[in-house]
Image 1 (tube, rainbow, N blue to C red):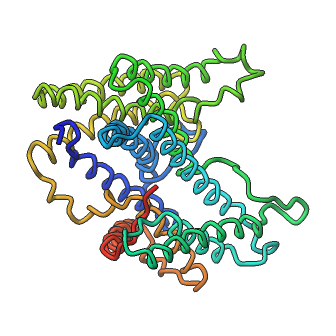
Image 2: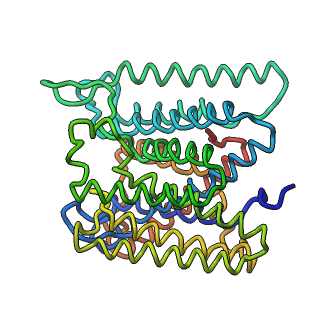
Image 3: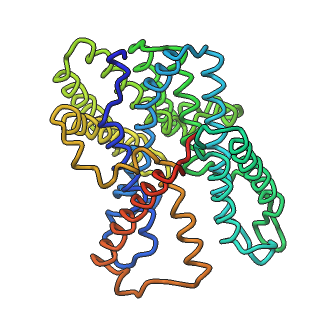
Length: 398
């Protein structure tokens, strides 16, 4: 096998850590009296908490995987057209999932024919039925799996038909209020995957794309785009450039790794990750006085700082996992890195079932430090359930 196509353990570990943290911060809503720095910072505030760093890191990891995924497909003999179809299909899948999940926030049980939480459970079930990785087997069983996928699609259509949101005076059907976490990932992946597909490993072009997305983000806040305000809504780049900026950062990091790995210059790679991290931090803190740090508004400072953190984190994890061979330190959360989408969706079952049962932990277990420990344990349980499902051949992949 070509050396540049060998799986990098640090990417899986980075993904696992990020998903573990995502499950953890997504559970903070259930706690009371916890430090502000753990959660999301309000849109009008200048600052960010731990929760504001997790999603950018995940977008960065999406970018890390793009060059390896496309290179492996090319090695298998897939044409550019076939790879393009895969990119588009994968993006649409994420966007569709994102739109369904976003509409949960606006679901009106009083108007709909089923309870919101049953709709949530059925939605998640449909995702598993459609996008589970079914094993290759004899035809009768394979037809059964195909039947499950078709049923899943029909279930999603049914859920869209019966969906009612809004109010009695203004009922609303399923619609993209915003694209949701998965939808934003889908759009950023679509843009950056096609950039890499066209530019290949041309590092100058890829760095140019990274700079462009950051400058587009700056231009939006600086008012430089005002002259094209009439067409601005049609020149849409996710999060005004912020989302693909994170993802393109990951693409750049992977291509740099590939080039330096060929030269056996691993120490240089770690140094380059450190330097890129510092440069992005300087950019982020340098723009902070102009528009502040805000995830909700996707300010240039937030983009720069989080991208810098991701470069530094990847460089550190590469040294730890791939150079010093400490992969075993992260075995307990391995499943979050190999069955990431499964891990992300399991809490949608958990929260819905608890709501239907009317169950809630005592306040003492949801308060302060005890509550934080509870959420850490919850995240670990979700990861272990993901690992168990993986062993049972239940694993989503798109």
